[in-house]
Amino acid sequence: MGVVVVAAGSGTRLGAERPKAFVELSGMTLLEHALRGVVATAGVDEVIVVVPADLVAGAEAVAAPMTGPTGPTLQVVPGGAERTDSVAAGLAALSGAVRIVLVHDAARCLTPVVVFERVLEALDGGAAGAVPGVPVVDTIKVIDGEGLVTGTPSRDSLRAVQTPQGFRREVLEQAHACAVAATDDAALVEALGHPVLVVEGDHRSLKITTPEDLERAERLLRLTAG
Image (cartoon, rainbow, N blue to C red; front, top):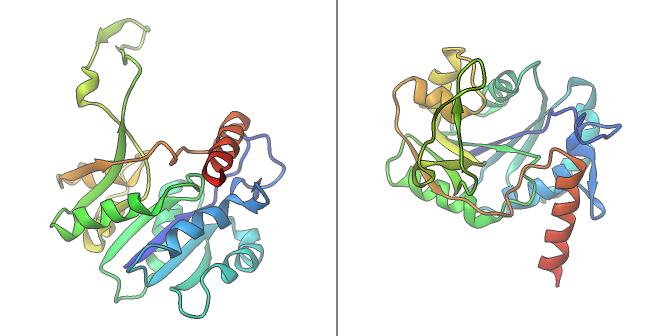
């Protein structure tokens, strides 16, 4: 089983002077935090970290010590202009032996191992794709081009989706080959008509995008340590 860790985000909204994955959280980079969860998941054989092309060497220095002599193999590769390009680059770097692929955002660096395990359990049960999600607490409105409300979907049927997102490799490769615009890999797979199962996510798997997110992550780490 292989994991593609997408760490090519710019960090602009975070107000950082460096790419997001290299921003520090409690003395460690977001990338290091993310890799801790990845390598602690049973069954991971290969890890591909995707970063901006000019930061491959720096990412190798940060990531290599995370696996250890008995851990999965780890490779750092340059990403592309869009997230889908980066995931495709990570897929291409996996060996032919990998049949199950998890795609994980380094920005969701505090995702607990149990979430990885739930996704893998769904794939082991025969799902072509599985993603973690949490219930939506806000009321959602659908609007038209003029901002007028056209509908209010029931919150019972809504989930805010997280990562890691897991797929059978051949399904994910087919989805990326279609080059459909999408905000996540599950949407690409859905566009091919494959069912994607949503498993239970976790509130700790927040996506760090803004300074407020970083502060929230700091608080979560303090609570965990306490």
